[in-house]
Length: 95
Image (cartoon, rainbow, N blue to C red; front, side, top):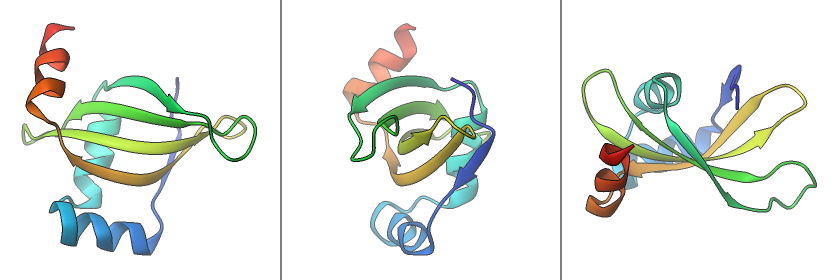
């Protein structure tokens, strides 16, 4: 999957900062730093499904980023991001 554009609505960006202490720059870094991406669930609109990306920021922070992928223009619309759980980090390290 190739992501050319990353979009994050303002309300989601605020939620990430307040609830998860994640800033948008870290989300972008995790998505652009060779993440492992897996299908999470079917989207409400056909062809626009939800995916989870597991990646590392340039500073070494491990993040789980959830986004809707729009294949028409290779856009990822961020819906959430948080630190990886211990289980996710183990799986990420194995691959």
